[in-house]
Image 1 (cartoon, rainbow, N blue to C red):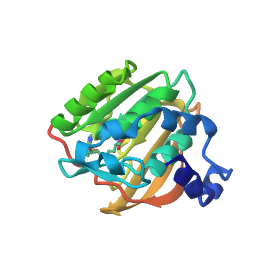
Image 2 (cartoon, rainbow, N blue to C red):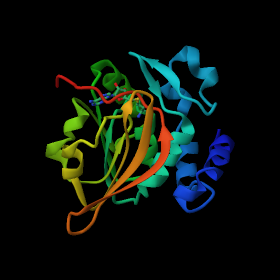
Image 3 (cartoon, protein in one colour):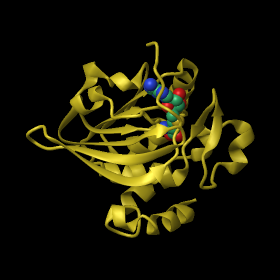
Image 4 (cartoon, rainbow, N blue to C red):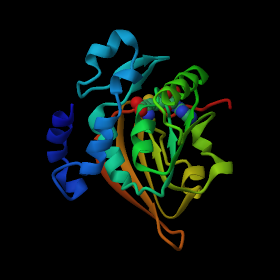
Length: 212
Ligand code: SAH
């Protein structure tokens, strides 16, 4: 799995400014047992570089995308991170390996419960799983040094840029079409000004309206 992640990374050298994923990110990915986050009948596929179904019409992200987005976040050990779209909790575990704390929001309560149980089983004490509409962020835990969104809205939700700390960074897939989006990096400078950069084309499930 690590090898295929590396092969992909060579093709995104322009965005990363280097032809490989940060070794710290690769080490984090290698420490998280991906097979523990996929349904039992998918386990034999857990180490291929592709997304897999996890129920409720949702998927676990492709390992390369998890590594690439984590790399774009440029995580530091002191960072407080918000993830929108917990799914099975795999990306949250990778983030938890590299940051101080991770708050992750999932709109489907059953997925949130399963992710919470799995993360606890694996000992990720620095991850909190919340049920709710991630388009609103998590006001009472803000600001966040880093925000990662793993489902795609049509435009960047205003609450998320608001909850970004000065010097903070948001990585988010944005696009009008389902399964066809651009991965954006939004940075907030010390004065609170936002700047946006486009990276690669990606295919995420839509960020839906929640009733939470
Ligand atoms: N991060 C996951 C991939 C998640 S797939 C991984 O590690 O593999 C996207 C997830 O976003 C799905 O579980 C979906 O239910 C969730 N989602 C969609 N709209 C949402 C919203 N408004 N708020 C929070 N989660 C949402």
